[in-house]
Image (cartoon, rainbow, N blue to C red):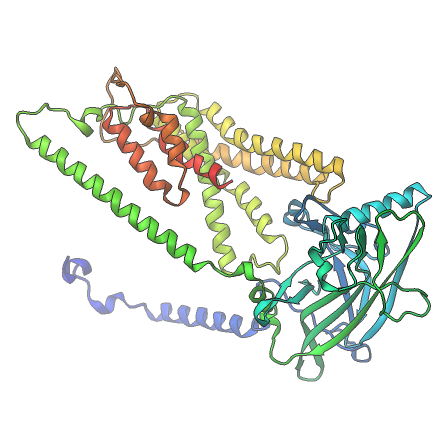
Length: 571
């Protein structure tokens, strides 16, 4: 296409904006510049930093109290997380716990206040928090102690939060590096075999068999970055680390935080006192700024590094299989074209043999249209969620935002599910579009909701923190029936008047399907089609082509089920 044809005879200067348009662009640029200049102190849109100062310098612009919040406890050896208050630790029921959004509730996060509270830039050593006493002769106290020992044996992990930032536990690993985790264990257990595992490697005195060691002391180090403002001096917290330790405090009035570890024998039948203590110190760091305070957590965790070799390996496999399938298809098409051009061959051969059956409505067409509609809804939700995450709105600092955004977007994308489902169903010559709408709005979400309800019932019986409250379930139902269902109806109503225009028609009588070998039968093709999820599209295309060439007019379900089966392998 020539430049003259592209410009359609317009003059070059006519493409430039007018004077009023330039003014609008200047105003827009000024607004964006001001927004950029005024938002340099924000790590995330909508999340402002908290300013801290010492007690004698407390103003309306800063606070001197550094509060510590506790989250649920979980373990890789158990599927049941528990709230902090479920264990018999030190509690503070006077403070009000922060409110949680929908995403945090669905993820099972239970953030509550704790009795740990510090004054900014005030270091303290061996401060008593509380003392817990157990008498195994009393049934209630024995149950609390047994539950605590069970948590130690299953290696349950604490998750503490300071200034909306996880308190990490860092330990040395091979090569002089540090490995940091956002949780630290309740304690460790040495079994009868004497093999130390989990956190029992920390101290050489953790060596008694059939013994529980509890970490009843923590050394907390809080790092801050100071900034000299116009007329006042403020600081921002940039990191929080701790080191769990175990001390057997003899006298609660004279704490030294040293000596032998706090041990609980496996067959202990006497009275027991556990004193919880902490030490805290503040350090200034001029290099780490508030906007990059999460970097040291992400960089120190080895599992967050990108596996470039695996990605390159998958990319090479995709390229290799793509080239192989492309060569097969090109050779097949080339042979078919040669046969089509021969005069002594039959008129219909290969692809042409099923040209009047390709767009024949499949069996269970309503179910297929419903699943395609729901898949479209989830696909759009996923892309928008990833886009917002790339912009930084769904950072880990914004707790629960990922799940909240996903649920809200899924609800709002109900119109897309109804539209796609109704349009596909109309193309399948379906007449019951209202039934299609009801099933689109209720079938897949209903299956998921029933599954969640059953699992939630089990979690509620076990007393897990992942159990969703009744009010949250009612809220989810309100979002479903109050927003998603009406939007699905709107999309289905619009889609019921439209359908896909097929390039060719279909015969009144479908072609007879010849006998299929075992390897060409749908079940085998579906299973094989999901073996390699990375190249599932190529597998779908290959097996769909094979069924078309073999005159299988019921090929429509094959690509869908092959793609669906790939999720089974991944799961």
